Image (cartoon, rainbow, N blue to C red; front, side, top):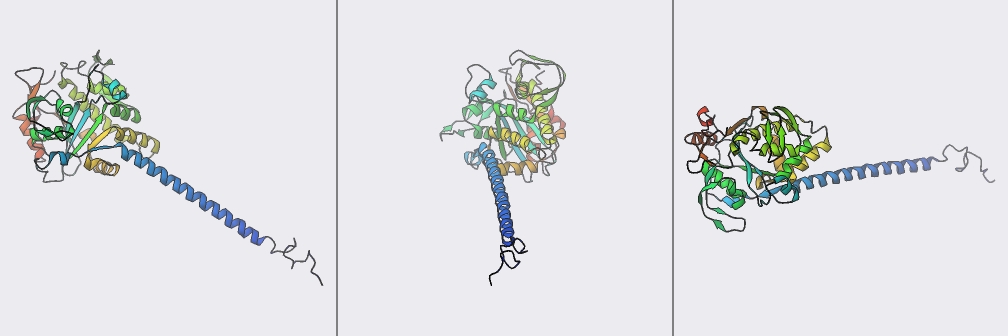
Length: 365
């Protein structure tokens, strides 16, 4: 007898409780596979994006092989874990943006507009920044140029010209020869990079010590707190006609003040809470950055930055290299002795800097 199509034993019967179970299991498997595939795609996409972002930031950083260029004729490393970092602000005219920000009409090439030896003592809970005036007359040692030729030593060379004449490795060698201090790392940022970094942060607030009216740059500020954008900040750290006696010495205090304000601003930001802001700041900071080979990767730079996390910008000690006006050319300065020797000795020995080493005969007004 043939089975009725409506009986429970017939799998196709609507009354059969087993009817549709295989289809439910199949549909469930399809949904799970679709979800798994979606998650997999998201993970791969996120990983790819993270790798792209890392590669871009890492590729922004330019490296200079300082150790290879200088060889073995260098001061000894600190016997402690202290570190010395040479920080240069370059007034490079390379590229349209740098040229526009640099001013100076037909000036070409590049010079070290700002130079600081940053000493981080053992423990890395504090730091000392020593500014070297750009108009300081120094003895430039014999250096190897970028094309492999040798430039002979020269006396009474203006410090900021060493960069344009021979390059960053020779600036490091010049600082090492004049100070006896071993430079462990080198950091350089150009005009455009400085401007973009300040703009990415959203501006930096500084307490202007006196009215500044600089007709050359157009900077016009009254005494008191001001939040400066990138272009204004650049004018602020470079002004020499609007403060002091119009020499390089007058603006060094502004440069040191701004550096501390900038570091405090970065440190106070919740970078982890805003990935987009973090990326903008990191991209601006790295794309115009040149370092020694030891820091020329995002990993190395981040590791070094983390090691400095205990340094409070508010307690950073800022000093100008003690200088005196040159007797032959009063528009230039020379290292004042014995103050300069005492200062460099303290850095070499990772010891406290005596008050006598902070006094500069040339004050710049």
